[in-house]
Image (spheres, helix red, strand yellow):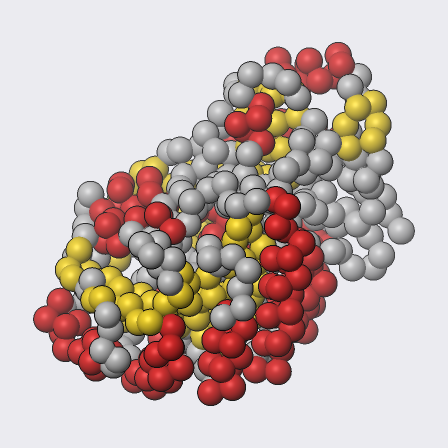
Length: 473
């Protein structure tokens, strides 16, 4: 059969070799046309429509080891899938091989040590259900179908980040299959350089098969929405900015420009979550509740799992998605005006423009302690252009690019690696900063010098390497 190689060329791989590989697997090997193939190749972002030559549905670590060896020995273009949520479609590849971890669902909570070990196919809905059974949680994604693997490896923003740090800040250790076929443990004590790179450097350094996290006591939270009509957005966003400067770590507050699901009108929504004493939370959010005032206020005590699933209805799988990300050192009046004026021209009512509050515990991790880079910025801005009709892709993408260009004078030029689109790979040095990027390249040279793991927001090896497995230039 013909499969795509890492150099972008197709080549025949003996069917006998493929059959031998399949026979060694505990899981399934799906070829084009097989039952379940189309469902297995489908991603969160419907704009990405790739057809891998092989999909390896791993049943355990042994399958991962065998798949890496097979991909390496045949120089195959290889992608790694866990949750399939990456907006750039990095969980798949055209014509190559996908190592699919979505069946690796093991979760073990240790309530005494307040830790959890979870395999890489776990989603945050599954993760939170298990940890909350013991009144524990750690920072995770805002949509329950998001996989823990991709989110953590890129950093991991979430509702608890200002109090407990990012998902990657709560990582204790990880099991990693390296490009040369070894199973490594990465932690502060073992392979600490790899552990550093996994916390923000994405999937560049191996296949992580399981993660161990710190957990924290998390009971009911005060959370919900404050909804304002779009004409009030400028004043509300200025009040939001000023409020955020004094907000305690227990509170994480996002602001989103969107269209109402009820009547289609453009609105500004403040999305708040206070993880602490509920009475104190009521006192803390009172100033924001008085701004406007809002036309709707849904803030109430709720279970943490209810908070985590609360945004699922506005983030369904199957839409066309094209995102742009940048970091905001400050949310200036100019930035506010730029966001509002450009959002008002959106061609799609499904599009979101979101300002995410950082700071708190996120900012108290030293800049060299992890590969995640947005430690000094007060906010992250992500533009989620979304639409249903593929024929409208050109106009929506053009509009999103114009919006992103208009943000350049008011933003840092960096951004969040998990929110980058396919055409943003050229901004990785700006995302990480020169010193962190240099360290990541050195780490790539050590653990993946031939760039076998290249289907990601790719850190290319240095010294001219990275054209194909086994090649030395």
